[in-house]
Length: 144
Image: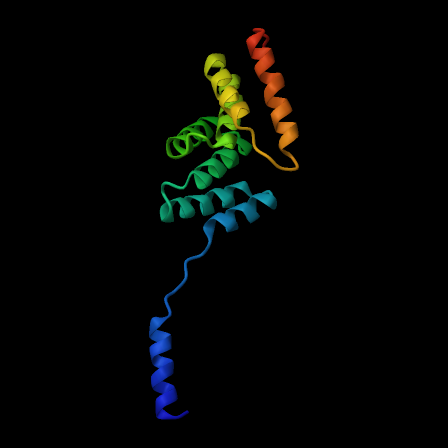
């Protein structure tokens, strides 16, 4: 290799920076495989890189819910809502966890916020209908 090619190559190599892993996508893939503990580890790493990303916090809350760590899930949903108060999934998930704890007034408020700006997409209708039914039951004073 000639002198100029080596010189140019060194400059290009020096400009290359190591790339960080995409921990969020890694965590989502691990969740799809059912490995929630590993997913939580990846979410923690993603959160270290992006501590105010509500998507990471919301997805962590979902993983905590799936591992029956509901208090951690509630904490992460609330933290996600601190950064994005309109995050529909966080309102939805938090509402149902609060209902489990018997905090029906707070749960109803979160369901109302969710229904004010429901998500759109192929699966959204079933979540919206579920939220409507739950809110109607709460308003009628029925236990879920």
